[in-house]
Length: 484
Image (cartoon, rainbow, N blue to C red; front, side, top):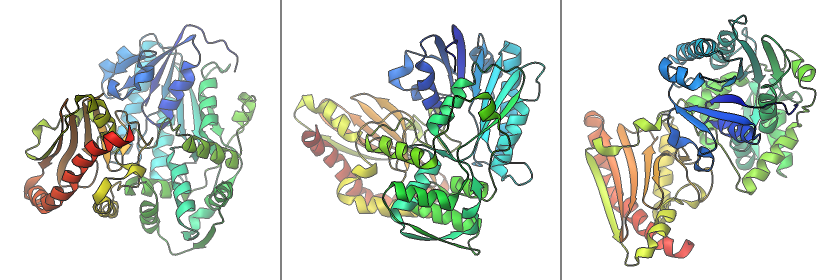
């Protein structure tokens, strides 16, 4: 792309999601570009870049905040979508897109850039159909604003849902009985190539609307699994059979991958349809971008994992509960609590104890009673929750909005407080708080029960709390003197 971007303000919506976080970093590489982020909660923006961007809080359902965010904007990225997490998500997607398009027109925005999914209406799954409808709505008024609508299929990158599914299945299962849809054709694309198309679209020399299908070589899901296994140095065998329903396939995925049931179900429905390029506009209008082959994208994703350089994950922001963490970052309303206090004599340990608390979960585990946590994680998975195998983005570092097994990080005060909100299936709302004081760690499990069932649940698990939470608090303190 020509380096002609000067004094332009670019707005990124969905800026704390998987694509949005990475796109923001790509945009910041151009010092002549002014980057504005439209987010629900400014605390979810990385501290390292917060002073380099203009942050506007709000929602696409709040027209006043939209107006404030879009004032003076030249180009707006629309990276918002749902994955069937609520019954009315299609309606919400339509309203969101209409509000955004109209606010852009009113603010005099020159161009909207939207990233949607490959597919055709006749065979598209419900969530792919919603993405198609979103693109149509954003493109509906070409006489007032131009829209570049990029359409991608399976996106491969460290932390992407598709890559985590493929990686986990390849690593855990040497042989798989699979549904027939594993032979459906798609055209995967690496995350870096997606970002290149998005970035290049800002100054693309084209007037009016444009639909651009992007992807690399045609592959089936079976082919992707086999090629990914080869990159990992593994040999895997897939045996497609006609008897696995989408529901059974979804349960298969949630047992062996970090993906929860609703997301797995939406992905399975999407994979049943052919999602191949319907036009050659990528080659025609972006000739400088040559997408990497699938094996190359897998190798790049694995390198990022090995070097602990995962910038974003599929679960950073979604339609799941606690997406807008501002509504979940205060457990003051909880009426049931389990508090454990562990004292330490050395006041200089405070920062180390805090770092030790931030290192729990994921591959680091939950200490002595890790098996009880695993049992709880399996139960949660079977009920359609996240379970423990969602893990964590990095082994030692946490940021607001990060996923941590079946928890969500909803507040961090460096050196002082870590607050986790439970995304497990429970009859109520639960938090786990680490309050690190100069001479003691105060660890509290907060619970706001829902009805009689919620109270029954709390008192049923209370005996396990004695072992699990008591050990957790003591080990966090003791580990602080060994790890740091």
